[in-house]
Length: 252
Image 1: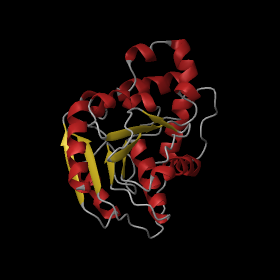
Image 2: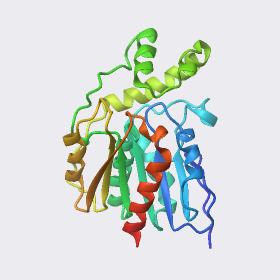
Image 3: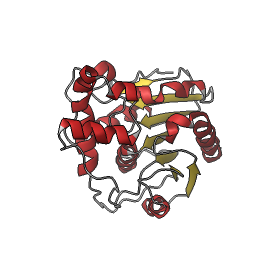
């Protein structure tokens, strides 16, 4: 059996020589592989867990950030493609949902078939975000908005030197997210789509989440967790148990 090693665009968080399924995770804007580091504590032993590792963060901090959305999807596709002959699932949260969605479209267009696309904390592709653009704001205002999002630890935001280093990367991600526009190429996904959200997410409407059903000819289902927009960091074990069960039902 040929062993395929992840590219520098993927971090493998779990070691599983012969996985039943591979789970590729796409972080939210400003996030990196560390968002999913604790998932190895809860994933079933026969799951191999990976996280997208874009440049400009963590061990790729010194590399320039991706400047356009297509390039980001190109690299995600190329990184996953070597594994795509075996069962795999894509999971994305917030901005990561859109990257995962566009990567799933690219994979299917090239003849690869995800077992499932799981989108989380994001309205369907054609629905404008309820969040106002912030990537253009002066630094003080930008950091103030970041603090309101509750996705960055307060001690990180309070560290001026650290934020001077991280802010350009976070801005770059937010700019990609704010400029994203869905392009209808006539391709509907064949794979099942599961849309996840949380009850206290101020940026999501239930109807906008349900409209993910319009982008697949496969099965669609949704589920809502307790918590705010970053519920995945607070409800990690419950989230993984839920999606693991759904994946099992799909691949059986």
